[in-house]
Image (cartoon, rainbow, N blue to C red; front, side):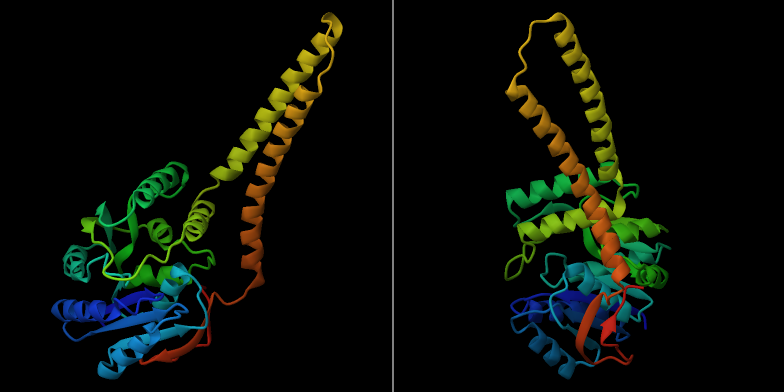
Length: 318
């Protein structure tokens, strides 16, 4: 098979018919009839799965994976990637912010020998000021502390060859940050700059708390800098304590000073705050080790619609 399209979906019933029409037309123009579109229903509560079933009834090239519950965008995308059979695989969201028609441009770039062609947003139409600013700060902050060179202003919208998809499927992370994982794999990767459209229908599924969780997964998955910051704070605390001890001793020997409860309280609070911060950072990393060691399946599949390969009820990232 020449091409697979992986589309994670969560409550996208309003936009799915329009996306499906545009995606099929683009696939036929690029790959003829030799393609599959894999929709992954990530525990939607609207008619998303009903639309996927209808698509499959009309066109056997449409495959649906229905997860038992909402696992989150990254795991839903990973489920689709595990089932993709194409020599090239496009990962794209269903909200039409990333135009399906750009597949043709990505395809032409990959013909030049690239392993990955990814979209980089030059502009984010229809997004709030807070979302734009927070995204810029996140990508630049992550780039400054990550040991892996993760491209700025990129999402998961990308075309990957078979080798890259196979490597991704073999990576055992449970807290997955796909754009970082693809960057870590390396190979020949090409950026394609485009202007991101506004959402065609519905509203974003990334709440503030989900964005925070996503950022934490990205930082802890691709940087040990928070652990180093905790170490630096520990050294700074030791130094400050030594200086303070010297000052207290000097005051005791040469100054007529009455010890104050305020200064003592501030010192205790400052040291306690630093200790709690360091413990919290360690807890984030240890928590991920704990979850990884449990060995539970990464996602649970309720049913599959269409497709040729057998599908287990549980799927691991490994």
